[in-house]
Length: 242
Image (cartoon, rainbow, N blue to C red; front, side, top):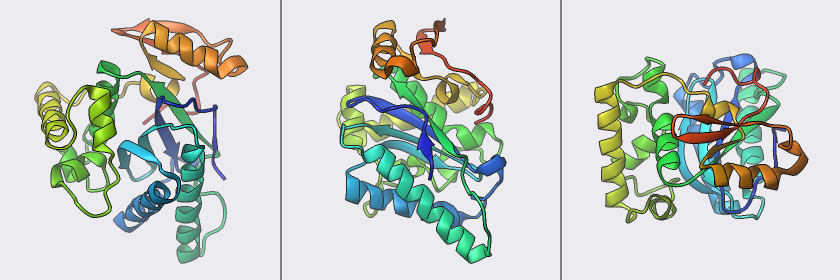
């Protein structure tokens, strides 16, 4: 079963990255990506998982979730990853691991830092050159947002709106679309490892709080500045590409 590389802290937003074993394109078919979202929706119903954004690509998954202190993130990751792997291996007559052993989680501060992380996830497949617009990749939070889907909703727009200082629903939708349009005009940008390789991104006070909360697991990690954010780093290598 997949294991996290840290303990979650209640109230924080976490950006989770989970990759297929050896970066294989085991999620290249839409049916498998949709099954992952099906089990993520089940996790939302069973455990109360609070999803703020997501994208399921051909070989990895990005999730932006809020921790409520009930252990819902770990249980949700276990459910979705295990069921997708079981279904895929059964259908293909395949044996062996489907996912990398550990998934990575980065604590994300609110306000502008959260907005940047949202956009980073939205533009994933645009950066990869697969689509020209985030809305064209169906298995994503942005596609759900712009379609205003009423059934099987994963996104918690009320919680997201509260974090961003916006009203839920239409206001969040319009602002997110504006952010994407502006980013596409300026270029989708390059991959930024702060969202997939660090332990925390945000203000200095926030990063120090996360470091303290993680205890020995973060005691020897360095805090560095990058642009307008502070980053709590860890050893690189396992997650070099997003």
